[in-house]
Length: 288
Image (cartoon, rainbow, N blue to C red; front, side, top):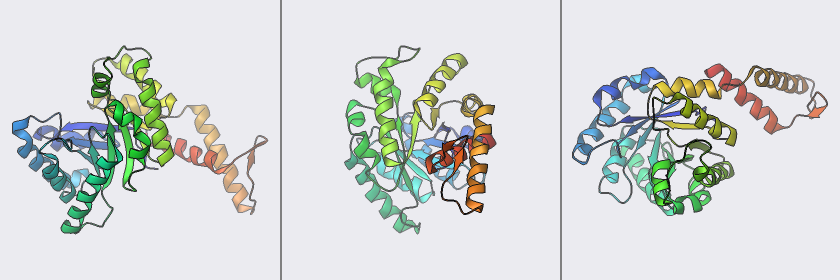
């Protein structure tokens, strides 16, 4: 699975940020055509994002475009610009059902065909922002082979639940986080935690990062470049975790060389999920 710890929002109408955000090296950059763009700037933002997608500077970063929701007049033009610009992923906000994903999928396929892109090349990501979305998370996550991740968006979800963030362990998000994570794991795709809004509160941000990491999220949505290094460092394996991962991989390699079908380490059987996790630990260590 691709390493996905940080997905950084970049306003689609901000030409300066669009031209420089690659230097911060997030795992994924998300060009936003939705909330960060005023109604009167939608056309301009769409054009700017299209040009940015084609720029060579973003060739080595996963490029995501958050389009406007299906309840708006903008999403079809957003989708046209994003797919023709060769975006890697389309993030659909306010996803509430598998039908939402299937509707987007059919339009993406038509644009890919018209633009000469390989069918299926554009991946999809669903943002869950309501109680209905949480309840339908499994069917959303498994709605299409194009699905690469599912995310929870905290602000709209808490408004829908008629509550607000409390800080600390944030019990108001626990069920949604658990539901989205289970959906992602059932679908074998990535899961992203909510963005943390106070960019000056490193302590609060890291507290929330550790909650997400402990629960099993692959990473978080981010709203500021300074959060990238903090997140990547927090997701880095400990020395003990890295040492164990190296020993697991060495044991697996030795067993394979000897033609053994069973691998053991310290008296314990090492099965494929353990080997896969060891590979992931090594990947996170290298990427810090």
